[in-house]
Amino acid sequence: MDASAGSGNASAGAGAGAGASACCYYTLLGIRRNASATDVRAAYRRLAMKWHPDRCTSDQGEANRRFQRIQEAYSVLSDKGKRAMYDAGLFDPLDDDDQDFSDFMQEMLVMMDNVKNEKPDTLEDLQKMLQDIVSSDGGSRGVGGRVPSDGTRRTRVAPYPPQQRR
Image (cartoon, rainbow, N blue to C red):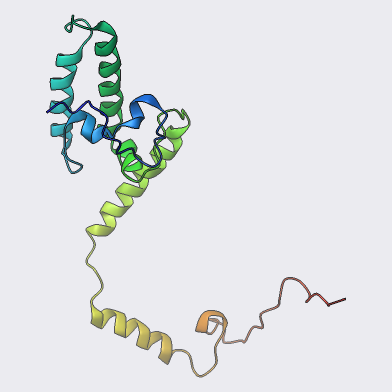
């Protein structure tokens, strides 16, 4: 299977007119979306050896173009942050300012992994939390249904006076 042919399955953030990004990176490397880092690396090495301009003597221009596309796909799919952005349709290969967002996405992925490892609340836990909220209410409600910790009532004031009709 020649995975370097365009599939028309472009990611939403990649932009169809962006050359290499007009083709799905997964299709380009001939791998599935859930491929491991090892699978991505193996596919890259196989295709890079096949299309390297120094090894492919039949059509230098085509070899150069495909090799660059393969390198771009690998650079995105081998980086956890860029891959998450690409999968979400947010990666733009023409935008050089993606590093900050990539760092942010990497932090978010780490935080999400940490949350996954926590024990989820049971139905009984959630019922107890709701009961605690209701029972501590005491019949009067503050903002959001809670009474301030000092026991006083607070009045919500509108930020702007109501406008009068003319």
